[in-house]
Length: 90
Image 1: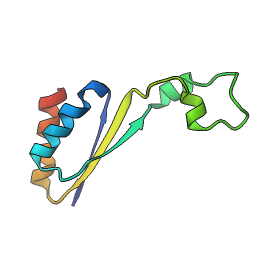
Image 2: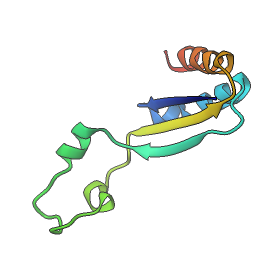
Image 3: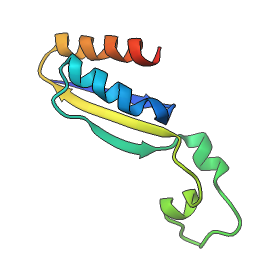
Image 4: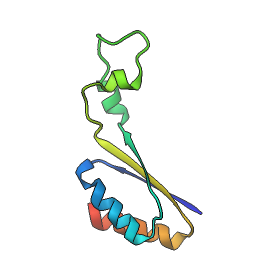
């Protein structure tokens, strides 16, 4: 078994990439809204509660990344997913 993980910066490409992964052999994909450390640090504000949640920190901001992952049975399928990703997003 192999875990394939990809952080997509352009959320508009998510649907196309999901289709490409499915055609390449992914039986299911988990997608998480995510943000990088820099955006997290930039989100720090003085108007937050003493113990802010991630929701507080990112309120009003659209997450700019999607972290996609799937488990595939073999290296060949993982290679097909990598090729589909390169073909889809460069």
